[in-house]
Image 1: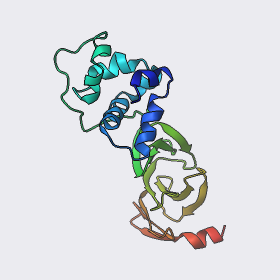
Image 2: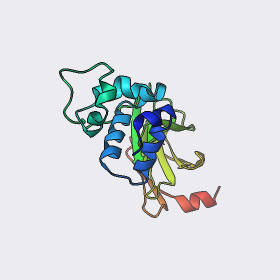
Image 3: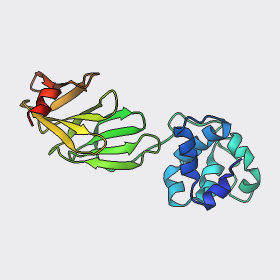
Image 4: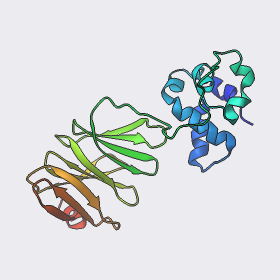
Length: 214
């Protein structure tokens, strides 16, 4: 067994557990540890010792909680109101800006912001991994391609953009709408983008022709 105390001392608890999760690991201690870490992610990142000071004492009466009764006896003890099980929401991420659109593919989340930027987050921890800049006004719609390699965005700057997810670069900007682009979609074979706008039109864009014409 890998002990949480040892892992905290080496500052590798989060990495170990999340690696187990991403590899498809599923057992009592991995599942319980996942909820513990994600629920208290920001606090534990700032100071791993808070696994004992904050996370474990306030976690439900779970297998993990019971396994550290000796360590918990040395901390503040919750005598009333301790939850009996984990809640439905396991992670809250605060970005400090108004969020207008969101898309998710496997372990990647894309968020459209008021500034025109697209913030890319780790789908498990919610940590920021990249910022895609290119739109000049709020991003109102987002969608990933079926294989996750492409991202399509629509904006109040009346444009549609196609992004390379791996590099974060703009592959192509599509102009033609005369008002805010409110919705976007991409075909399963990644050959066509569909966009809808408040100008009361739907545009169908041929990705292959557009890229060839660059």
